[in-house]
Image: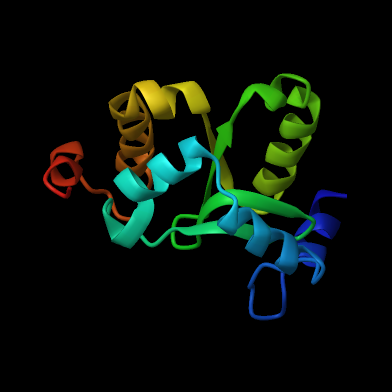
Length: 144
């Protein structure tokens, strides 16, 4: 089953597939972003502020990720109050992403709004421990 998911989710050139009908939903989500998504995008993820390109509302197979970095195979999800009822779905989604090498970082919308530094440190800690670039934490602190 795990290998079937990987084959099903990637193209021959190893790009991630997505359901075509999600394109319009992702576009609407970008136009109607939440306050916490707007803060996270503008203060951390926009214009390679952390050294990597992130995109908003990225369709990945049958899901739409809040933020995605293809270079790191990283999804960042902002969990609001509605996610309390969706914990089981979120776990399945994270497991699905993980089955083809995508790591998910989940942050609460309250932390984004009230403590952006905590969120920044969580993301930076992942970036530092990521084998992709091997940058130091100090290197990220100097970048915006």
